[in-house]
Figure (cartoon, rainbow, N blue to C red):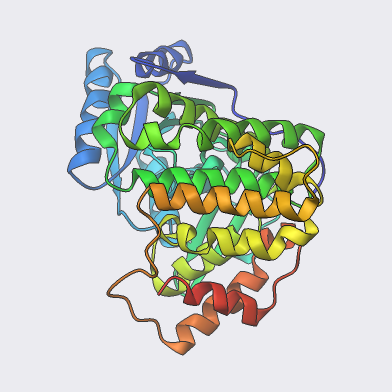
Length: 383
């Protein structure tokens, strides 16, 4: 992975920033907007705040409701067809992770009809920019929401495809407090921990470099030290967490993630358990396993998380302090259960997940290689 920085053109944070989105759409004379949002009461409440603004500004819109499940290739194709049939000037995606992933892929497919099946390759093939994409975030689930990366599920193959396409970079991203409050759910602690995990993995990635490191380290500090307050609903803490998510997204675009992300994605594709829900169970163990290959970086992570590390501490003790800090966060957030209850996974599903994790390009970023047995052991921590 080459050293590069690919980012959205502008990000608006704060109360009523959704109005900035409307200004941006109108300044470009975009009159037909396709709004993508998840199904459900919370997303409906959030989307009403957006569609009301569209109506007030005489912007023609249509809504594409996606399921709560991850973005699939079939769904991306359906959205691409709808973009074309509606003759949309732009797409506005409301939500996080799945909604953004399917929108990025669909915007590229709609503008590049020569791409028949993006599942066959994860390399760049788009000849022109995708249909303009604007994002309204409602949770800190995934730093890739700020990036050119999308993760699409191969419906038939029970695997995840990490699709890196610079032509899919969002134009504008909005984080509006009011929309955010309407859409946040009980999953917020899981979302925030997943975002922290992405930041740490990006920092210790084999592809990390000076710029990605600076983004990642600040992201770790902002997310880690504001998690507790954010989960309790403190507005300033939640604001800092999303700033951290943004920086983690920039780092992720530069350096990729790692073994934890690869395992969580593979498990989701094989077994249907949302990746953000499995990350807390595997987080500390993955860090413990890769720690001998991280140099002095875990010392930086521990300090960024607020842990007290002596200036004379050995690399090994600094690494232990880092892992302990993560375990403490997970415990304080009430996510330290032994396993996800009520779920049984067959040996076949477990084997498929482990094989797909090994093939995931994010696994190549891990500072220490994992074999199938280690991945299987990680997945057994989940259920």
